[in-house]
Length: 241
Length: 328
Image 1 (cartoon, rainbow over the protein chains, first blue to last red):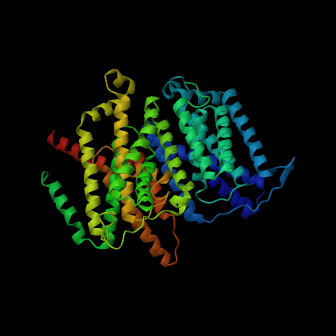
Image 2: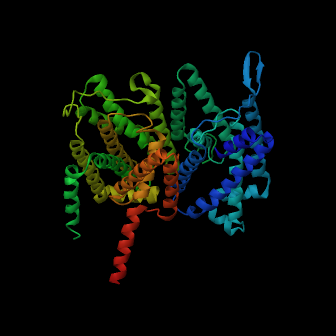
Image 3: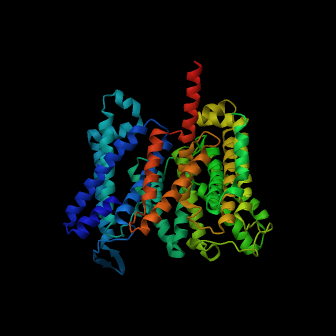
């Protein structure tokens, strides 16, 4: 949401070049990710996982309301019209194609980072066992900070892509929240290919459901699908036990 | 003093409708209804069963009661138990496989989160009979109070209804607290496999508490519906309400009988105070919409970091600590 607002203010209101605005948005959100980690997550890393979930939920409320206070609940958009591609009577919105392409590249980059670099290996290791890693001489704090910043940066990237298609308002984040969680878990936490597959399956279920009757039924089907998959494969579609 | 304290509170509670003006009375009724729901949630929440699906049970409680009344003419006296049974069935349907396949922690929270979205979306999608996002109003049964329709013209009468319901909720909480199942669930929340090995029937214990919690939540939803005479899918269900329930309990205190009630008092009063403040500021030309939830969100984060046991839990700890120090 803040990434989208950054894009809106810089590119939409102050006429900064859109690529510069995107870089600013990604930077800002990754700094926010880092701050959230330092201020909120690290003090409660040792407490039950549910508290961490709730604290970030509280943060969501907080940020939404701050945005409401500052910019009110009006829907705003960039007012940017991207052309629509036509191919064999199929219509593709350019914004969506761009989002698809950039998301693919971003995913590949993160995958390479996690598997090919030292710090990437450290991130994967720390997610497996938090205590042992420290004994192995890895600076736990540094790893967490890098992870938080990258996580924020990716959210910023997503914001840049979303702002091309959707209006910005303080509650835009929560409209993606539940489905994002569910896609991550459905794919298997920490499994990128699984996440990709889950996102694909859920989108298709929602679209097909929406095609045959009202959109809500598409979402109902998607959520029910998630519940049922959790029963059969709690570790996610591609997750390992 | 210690022994007579509950009686003083009890008499004060009975006297409330005779002294309180309409607006505070309305607030107290809302606090009691929500306290019932929060207490119901903490029944299972305190054992590490964090459900984000209680919005679903609350909507079921309200919508089943109201739909049966409007379309079937069935009195809420039958409708409310029917709604409670429906909620129990729903809990069974989702929770049994969850517990059987050992879905715990974050995963359980997410499955129940999906449940609350499913119920909300189904209500919205069936807009022809439920009114969809616009909400739903149970039909008035003539003017004034009707016992048959469970509709009350005066807040005073309804106050006693919710007071009884809230009291039942607390009694159930205490009964669970003193029963064997509490020890079973405590050990399950520590280590499932070990307690299964020690002879605890893990799935059955968890199912019992989950269904009990769902039933009480549905009762809360039905009472909300009968009191407000208006329900909406986002007003009593969906992720927003599910999170609100969890937050309020965390603020009040998860592990004590009156913790959820304290949580309801704090959160509802805060919302009301800020709402009034914002309205009066708006009359002065200052628009601060969103201030209430800003403080709310900030408070939640601070509570979870600094007071994870909640206000009441912390207060009891402090008092107990003080006593021990003065004795020793």
